[in-house]
Amino acid sequence: MRIVIAGGHGQIALRLERLLAARGDEAVGIIRDPGQADDLRTAGAEPVVCDLESASVDQVAELLQGADAAVFAAGAGPGSGVERKETVDRDAAVLLADAAERAGVPRYVIVSSMGADARKEGDEVFDAYLRAKGAADDAVRARAALDCTVLRPGGLTDDPGTGRVRLEASTGRGQIPRDDVAATLLELLDTPATTGLTLELITGTVPVPVAVKSVAGQ
Image 1 (cartoon, rainbow, N blue to C red):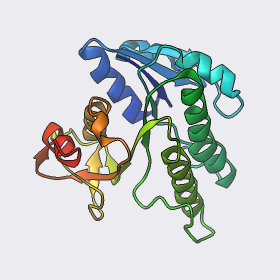
Image 2: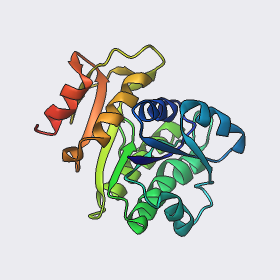
Image 3: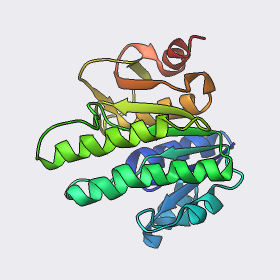
């Protein structure tokens, strides 16, 4: 498969790229900073430089030509303000969906956040982040032409992955290693029967492949 990942230098994205490369898939990472290209190559991915805050739908659709799936794993990151929560966490996710539709890419998986809600109240930056993520989820799920799955991890850690998770429509609060988020994304990409689902993810007791098959009804 050819998988295009927005936010290709992110910590989850790099892990996913390594997993894809290890099994012989073609991973393409969209990055804004050309200086990050070597890190992607080391992970086994093809780097593509594109600023999703300024690119057009046609430009991004060109990058997606021939892809089997698109993954949105970008984020404005810690320290960014309300404006970039909107331009990256919301608008860039919608742009990628627009481009995927235009390029005929059937599968779209978006890394969201537990608690994402377009109607979240509050004036803090984190409130704006959850509103942006929720709005992006709503916009992507509305695309009839896309087989979309929304993944909402709990608190992210850099602990080694356990390979065992709790993956449900609602899990309650918890943490999850980035390793296990990437492993779950890989399984979701392979399981189109999860289309239309919004899933929360925390550490649990069920092996990742089994957890994904369970929510897919397989």
